[in-house]
Length: 316
Length: 249
Image 1 (cartoon, helix red, strand yellow):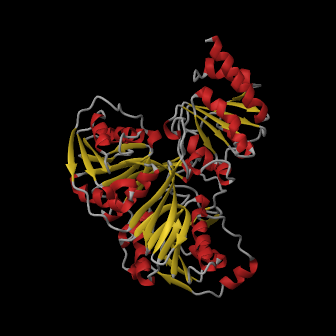
Image 2: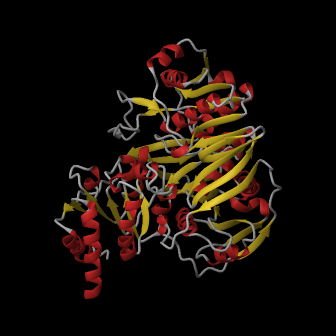
Image 3: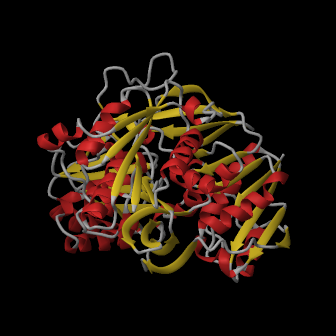
């Protein structure tokens, strides 16, 4: 068995999601090759070669592979596919965009968002916003899989010494052109890999009010997130959304502030190790999953919490 | 310009689903079913394109059991001009649906196919990308803004890092994200009007598509429940718990 892993990277370095996906590949077992497809991405390919457990890195470098253009990256994956029993990508927006296209071209039924592995052809994946877990067995010759990163502990980013093989890129399909990107700039940790996450919901009342969560996030070295309601209301940008159709997170500590706990939000955070909820409605469903809850006015509780954390810090 | 919209009948998003006792799946008998919310957004977008003069005809398609007729009637009431049901009792997985939609797309020759980015039942997030692949068309997934041009569409996509904008050549497949629009409510006069709109029923066999599932579902279980926690009085008590009990700070 040989497994191809599509790396998630920014041309310069590999993102953590790649490490979780390699971990899933290790659970399946067999040789692991990592595909780094991008433009001017030699540094990312070099970083991929350091990942523990990787046997080979395939480095495809061309302008048409930049910016995650699905048509071109899928064509590349298809051109490589016949050497592999499994093709894996993290279930990031890029993996979800590219991999089903490759799967269809290979006439394979993709298995989305796996959270555990029962065997080389049998996988567990959440359905219905995580309210059920389905065990499915694939009858396809190549198993094309996206991996829910929170389901697998990352392998070490260093310690490996894989060979890097440069491979040719397919010609530009000409179907899609990248126009531009609005990148959310933040000094905070990235939402899906942060140790702690502070999220706000509709109860925040406005985008302006999210500012009161910042000192809390600072104290906890947390990423900031939001419920769908808060994003739909325009309080914060879309890439903050945690939930069934947003980001799936499983930090050590998740603090839900002014979030009622709709099913689709819980789907994105209920695997967090410790959940704290602050909400004025004591009947809010978020309290059913929270380890610790405070019922009350978030605008009073959050600043006091920040003060308490500061005090604790001083005592240390 | 003709627009094809694919809609799926799913368990209503407000229903708390229950896993069947025999572990074979999720209880769907006597459960409220609705149009997949993302597909509703897709349909709304098509209707808006038509209202803006960018689309001339909207064809709604659904694949599945006879009851998908209701979903398509809703689609007609929202503003689709006609509907096609590919009727089958067989289990349909995304690749099979993409193949069915491909054969419809080849017959109908739309310039644009719009559908939800994922269905809220199986959460696969595959069909649109697969359809684009099988047709050799461009794809624009997770759309939060669509701007039509003569031979191309400019689509803003919700991605992990923020927003990407791409320009795709037509014909194209677009899948919708939550913020693309807010679907309208269906009105009674439109429900009445929908009853008179053309409705065609086909089968996978007639379309020559093999829909045999590639994934066998071995079992479906409920995930481990988190045990309910405790309420603490104030911030001080919380910090104490986080520090000394949960040891997370």
